Image (cartoon, rainbow, N blue to C red; front, side, top):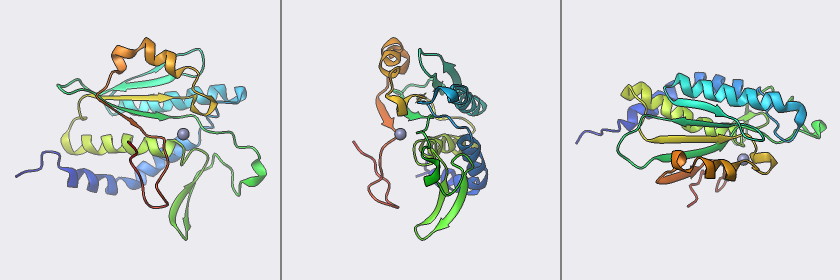
Length: 201
Ligand SMILES: [Zn+2]
């Protein structure tokens, strides 16, 4: 039976596109979106706008939505017949103090070879810009193979996770109809161990 997901092609597209995907992630990592520091307020918005532009370029109906704090980014793929699948992530990052503990500038990402394999060194690479770009790149590869995005996706990104998410609950309540989903994937959790990703239910 033919595999209608063509998942092997999607995965090989992801592999083939890895260099470009890394460049996109590095561009995202260069934005110092530190949500707890008022001096970086403009950078936090710039990260939201960068993400929104990436999603719009992929064909999502994407928008930067103001809140009393930092903005949300919300994106929808075309509506189909299924209950939506929601992906959550955050585009803000933790502060970088004390800088002396860094062996390189935190917003100049670099891929390094380590005994544990290749890693990306930059603030936010492992929390949460790297994680959220995994599914953005997955949708990109899906579209390259299928010619269209998967339907019934809702993407929600906040810029306040590292400062206590004060706007998240009010935003969810105010936009409950728009954000209602059958399953929510919270893409901001831990790994079971190095080299062993986890899905926590
Ligand atoms: Zn996080």
